[in-house]
Length: 196
Image 1 (cartoon, rainbow, N blue to C red):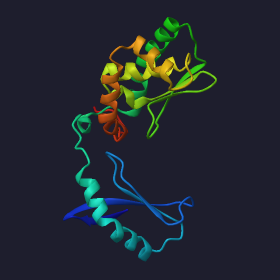
Image 2 (image 1 turned 45 degrees about the vertical axis):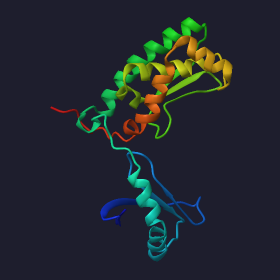
Image 3 (image 1 turned 180 degrees about the horizontal axis):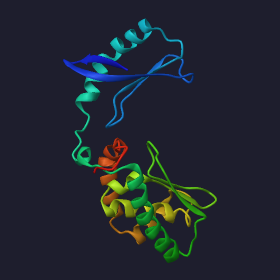
Image 4 (image 1 turned 90 degrees about the vertical axis):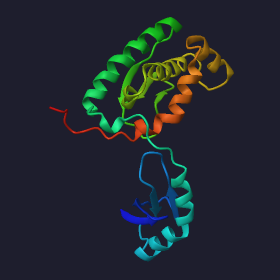
């Protein structure tokens, strides 16, 4: 990690070494510090030069990053509490929707994914990000319905979206909310212990 002066403010820049890169890559993800990925044997001088090369780009990107507005930094929800609540809410919706569609799933698991909200495997296993519990109920509901619909339509074609719309007419509002605010939930760092 390095503190870098970007346009007059100190920014925490994470340095990660990876065999997958030949030069370097700079990533900016909403809610997380910028990350410079370099090859395993990159020297400090090489890293300094890479940072200097991208300073103006980094400044422009950071200027356009949205400010958090959900207030999650005040939340004291542990991962264990979040998983327990998410399991209860998601299971209820998944069971109800699967019955309504006449489909079934093989299992339902919760994960701590960094970029996905849910998935449906070709074998009918449903997986959800526990951080969905941080979202408004209609957003969590939409993601669960979306994945359950994949049990009937295993693609993102027009038939799939028509099915989602039949099950949740206003799904676009939830999808738009998730596109706008999902990064804040992904950036949430739960405390290790519940507040006393």
